[in-house]
Image (cartoon, rainbow, N blue to C red; front, side, top):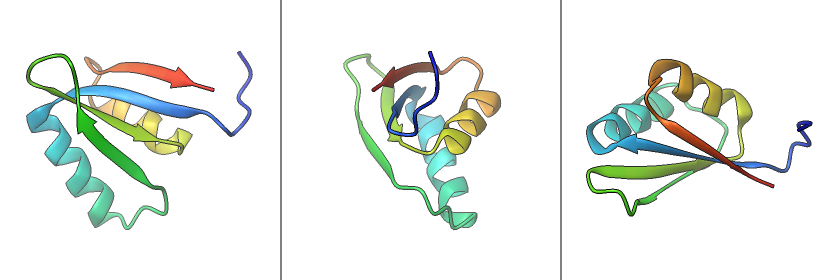
Length: 71
């Protein structure tokens, strides 16, 4: 799969990790948008972003997170 730049990255993370991710996003004054929503999996949330670098940073910092890429 080739990167096109229009993908949306959905990351399934634990609720307590989501607050740390949002704090990091706010402190770094990231230029990317994020969307946080409740997940069907208990104790988890989904963080959506179109920024590949921010998604990679989350995956690197939280290796247990699951990633889904929507085109």
